[in-house]
Length: 142
Length: 91
Image 1 (cartoon, helix red, strand yellow):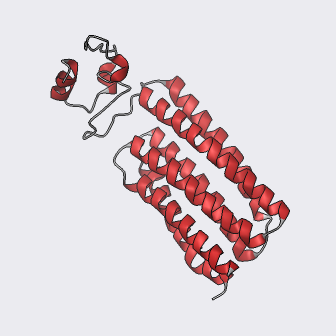
Image 2 (tube, chains in turn cyan, orange; image 1 turned 90 degrees about the vertical axis):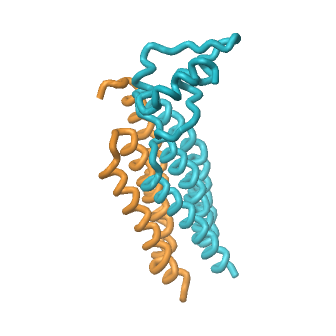
Image 3 (cartoon, chains in turn blue, yellow; image 1 turned 90 degrees about the horizontal axis):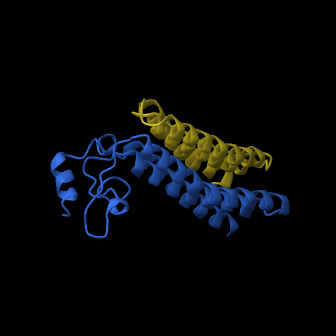
């Protein structure tokens, strides 16, 4: 009975870890890769560590595992956010089929009350992959 | 099939496949942030593999390595992100 629970938890954890790895290998864009890696991998590691805690069933192992799970759940989003922000501001291009860029020029952050859009100075480096027509459409409010 | 057999014949090879896929992204990644993302995921895979290997071998000592790796990885990723942020857009 206990073995069955452990095996099922291990299968879940391995499935989520594999989904993260496939996402990192196959996604077209660094932001999508970051999303796949940070979310699925922390869930998968959590399941696997839970299985290990059930397997050993002693206090010291469970304490260590709670520490690892808590630390992973706390730090994985922070690390992903810092990395994505740094990648964006160092000019990593978006995927060319991306439709919205809230942080860059034309996004919500640069839109004034009357609908005019302020284009920042280095918008060319940020929107390198967006085609000009799309940029014009954004500039004149749809 | 005992649990140790199940772990060492099915779970560990699947995690190894995931590690190889992540390593492919480290080799291939067009830019530095891609490689940092893949490196972060590699460390997470090593945490998972050492936890699973502690089941396969019945030794809970392997979890200490997982604790240390979970602590170190965050510092490494934050340092890389800080470096990328300071470096700016010029490659």
